[in-house]
Length: 190
Image 1 (cartoon, rainbow, N blue to C red):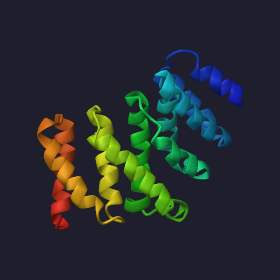
Image 2 (image 1 turned 120 degrees about the horizontal axis):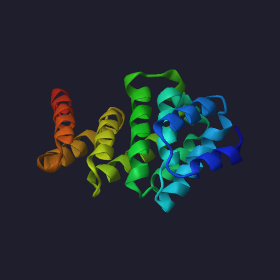
Image 3 (image 1 turned 180 degrees about the horizontal axis):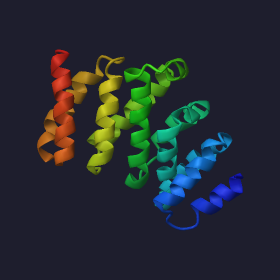
């Protein structure tokens, strides 16, 4: 697959889950196109479309390490995102990165993700958690922030405050994740 072919597929109207799966299979063998795909996410965010962000999320579920060569670009683009249709899958990618780094302690991520990367993810996640957004990005952000608080000690008390204030207004899924997160924080003495 070439860069041009990738753009043609992504610009061809809404793509199906089956088409995304096929695209992911092709992109797994074309690691240089992954950065191009992410750049397309940033463009689509401004256009109000989301083929690239959905494809990016599905690709990261299979081969998260493909993000490492352009981690700087990834984290620098987080603050640019405005469309919930793009933020939701990217928030999920942030959650996967935090799990790889903190929960799984995957050496590839621990060695290649800097404090600057983690801080930019943290900033975006707090923005998504407290912003006027649907619940899915908030749930992903909440989990990322829990993990980030294992490294940055000021995060857990702030996360606890936000969750306590927003709990009553959250969806059932949000409340379930918030309760689990608050229980984990309580066990840690936060």
